[in-house]
Image (tube, rainbow, N blue to C red; front, side):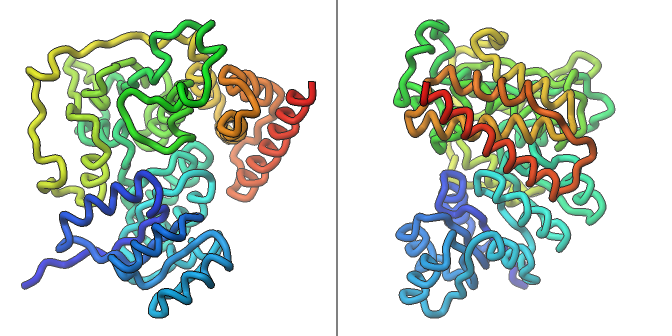
Length: 388
């Protein structure tokens, strides 16, 4: 009897994680049917993906883009915007949703997919940073697997056998392009320098977050929700080689780490095929001798205060993480548009954060309202700074 092929929807198929996921899926065509795709504005790439994978339904950002694609692909149903993503999450035949979109746009379809009892392969930070309590409670209620795609969370997931015996989660960070830079040098850092990540090839926003270490702070908040650990029991260690993707320290002193070459294909594939491990793109064995040395450093909270701010937001709880995420994202966008300097990303985020009043036990609607309010306030602050 033929093996059952799992029906998969990919939200964000044209982004970094989405395209790498399709590379993984190309090598295991007997495992999955690609039922649905979503893309933002990259019409050319999604058009090629439609030809290759023949999905039943495709969501794009606007009606204009949907109409344009419809002329070319008459056998595909096209939807658009937030409602289009919800429609994909509601498809009865879809069994798993890979959430690889960036930003808050991933939150609503993730929640809808959980309510429809679909397993989630999660590569969207905002889902747990903004609404971790709501999302994880729903996952438990509907008995849905949330399978982490981030390399760090995948590593912890693979190392975590009995959480009652665990002392600490250890999240590793490469340290980004400015690990060896002085604050003075970082003050004058330009966009190209911030985007020159030494180990990972990622989208621009997440690469800048890696340069400030905010990305690691957001991962700490995610880990808190995913694995139900106190912030005091989550450590961040700089490991420039990026061979150890994260580790779990048990109460008897044993540490179990997940080691491998820096490749997103491995955690993507593990999330998709869990609990199976199958041969994929990365067929070359890890070479311990060639790797030669593993270095570890404490993160410098003076140089990288965004990491400390993320811990503070997580510990305070309520909608403080929503504020942190929204203010930081708007500041990063301004830096990408060369409107502000690199160190001003933190300064802006910190100012918005310090003036913020949190809501406890916020509903999803309140979270989204707060997110929008904070973004407007952050953009106003940036405009004011530029006018000076």
